Image (tube, rainbow, N blue to C red):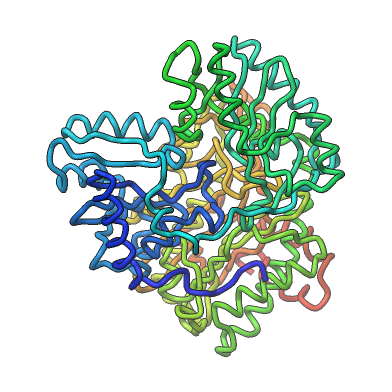
Length: 606
């Protein structure tokens, strides 16, 4: 299994660990410290050695920040994690606060006196965060101090896991679609045109994409933890533990980059500074340590996005071909899974863990599954209302008749990454369930059928997914969609569909389409497909070039949960056409489950 079901942490341990951390702060002259859910690479997913927030608080979500002072402590999470945090931490030790309604700086100002000092590890926060936090705290008379050693690490001590040493592999050209040499040359031209001498690369998926390598340092993410310096007129420098490199991989990388151990990074950054080089640094993704090391001079640091982000997001023809193949393969596994679920779940023979195991086993039967793309969200009944629920042996629940089951899962294949969510009726759904599901489906269809001109950003499309819910006084507290990589991170930037995304969508980008509705203590609903941004044929009589989406995911949507009276003829036509496509592509791969697929993809009125 790629997923385990152990309890993430014991909330009762938080009190003692916070007490030890406070002793460490007092001895260091600190009045408070920030503990983020981040590692040195600022990625969403981190290795066990960097799970400081989880170790301290018990919270295992992928985004959060704890602030600990001498007499108070708080955990800040967004709306996705409020319910989850309440089940994982000691609420007598930590106050749970939801951002953006609550802000860490305001909470800290209410707990500390003027002249207090709050510490932070510059390796674990971006420059954008550090600059903003320093500014707002100074207004409250609080000094923000970068630390040379993380106090949580000192308390964690020898039991802290060692950094990972996952093996690095080469991504073949038939999947990458473009050689590393070509990518490097293109980005060198970008730097030269901008008058920049180098760019610091800190995101593992950027480095993996640029050099056409993959790794296994982080669970579910085929990347290697490394840093790189991309030079405008010389070979890139790669800083990676060479124990991760087999002889063939080392030979390949030596041909396109200069290899260094991670310990050499400080010296090489110093060389750039002393030589007066103009260095691109992404303040939104690079650790603040780099800014401190390079110095604050505008002549040295150029604030600009990671140059890999947009080229990586624009999938080339080989990557698009690969993702289509991956989604067809995954659709077959999902069809077999949903057919099994319909046979077994109504009789009470399936629990959340068994549901996860079965799905992973069916994907593994493809013989090409490399990993799952994240821990499967397998939420029965009220557990489905926890947006990022992760089933454990302690929370495991039976799938019961009369309830809904939400399963959000994905796979990592060498030719593509998948992510799909389906909500399934176990037995007979209530009228409310059917109404809410249909409202979510209407939002899903609105996004899938959207037409938009060049320059349109995700923020402009996000409301499409919410309009039907808004009309009924309902909403959901997460973004409508995130970017997805090509055998890389299942959450890829810079593109997304959300209330904050200002990045224009471009052909070749992949985004998810996943509106939802969650009734705490009752059930959760989410319908997710992956979409490819495409150019469209000119609209007759139109004056502007339009773009749209191709739906990549090929998995039936539960017709038993749809209330046709709430849908327009155009929406019904879209659903019937989508199911006809699923049936045409997936049915030839099925034998035993073909009758099930034909029935579940029949026209809505049939």
